[in-house]
Length: 135
Ligand SMILES: [Zn+2]
Image (cartoon, rainbow, N blue to C red):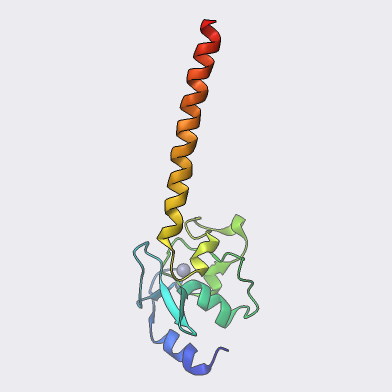
């Protein structure tokens, strides 16, 4: 549920830039990846995504990425946001996982295990090939 209070809180964290295309700059929280964040219902989401939800389409699907048409990744001007990847100025934010507030790094450990396992298997294949070639 998006309330006017939430939208007011959002707007207080923005500044209209005097650039030619009227970007609206985010000056709230920014995560370590440079993504502007706004908390909605106790969940941090990209601020440009919040802007799209508030001012363009509140039915935005969770798996749908929001792109910038301007090249300013801190811009939250709804007129500079699009769902069309062909209009995107850059594609740094096309990762659906930004919907998730916390990335569980524990889940990355098994991935490293897999990568190591693949490397080991590739080495085994190489040595088997060598053995076959030498016969
Ligand atoms: Zn902009």
